[in-house]
Image 1: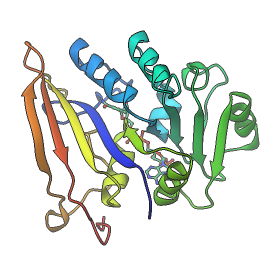
Image 2 (image 1 turned 120 degrees about the horizontal axis):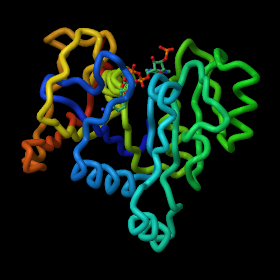
Image 3 (image 1 turned 90 degrees about the vertical axis):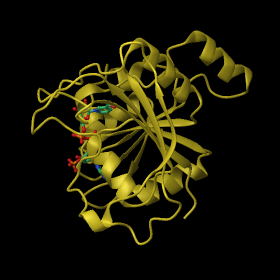
Image 4 (image 1 turned 135 degrees about the horizontal axis):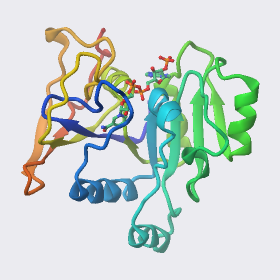
Length: 236
Ligand SMILES: NC(=O)c1ccc[n+]([C@@H]2O[C@H](COP(=O)([O-])OP(=O)(O)OC[C@H]3O[C@@H](n4cnc5c(N)ncnc54)[C@H](OP(=O)(O)O)[C@@H]3O)[C@@H](O)[C@H]2O)c1
């Protein structure tokens, strides 16, 4: 298959949590990390989130820095990367930040579980909708579609379930993780990579690209590369 270069970016605590057990999308990144993430976004052709993150938080996914947006325009790119949601059943409000923040092209990959009223909301909000006929979105097909739409560099911004499925299918090239000097604990608090998980023999080995202390408060930045071919895809 032909797909974009895919990189996942995560903000997590030392115990690997990407949110607290309250699941309200708590802030984990430091100001320095927020600037780094903004640069990463500005370097991407598109930014992708999973369905739970999309429906609950409807993130803006835009580039915050005016300078970075101006650089993109000067380079002949769109002001913001394309914003993408992978969602089994979309439930976005018409005035949600995902739909309204921009300017940005918006794509939703979904299934027949998204009802006709919601399809109208998405289309009225300027989103192009792709419907896949399975219980969930076919990630390989979605990435192929993105490649044909000119997406060469795809940034994935979670959540845990989407991260896991992309990794299990061998669709990820690199991962960066900001590790905040915090502990959340909580069995139900989501970790960086969720889903059903892998047995030890199927675990995916990563190659360290860089590790650095990012903040004076002890926040770390880890950068890993994935093995070239995870073939066949790992069984859950
Ligand atoms: N700190 C960070 O870096 C960061 C970033 C983003 C999100 N988060 C946090 O992560 C949490 C949400 O993560 P999450 O794991 O619950 O959900 P998620 O990964 O955001 O969304 C996953 C959902 O997308 C839908 N989906 C459709 N097709 C899929 C496919 N092929 N593979 C996987 N999922 C597919 C599924 O819905 P169905 O199950 O209904 O089919 C699935 O449950 C929130 O607490 C959010 O705050 C943290």
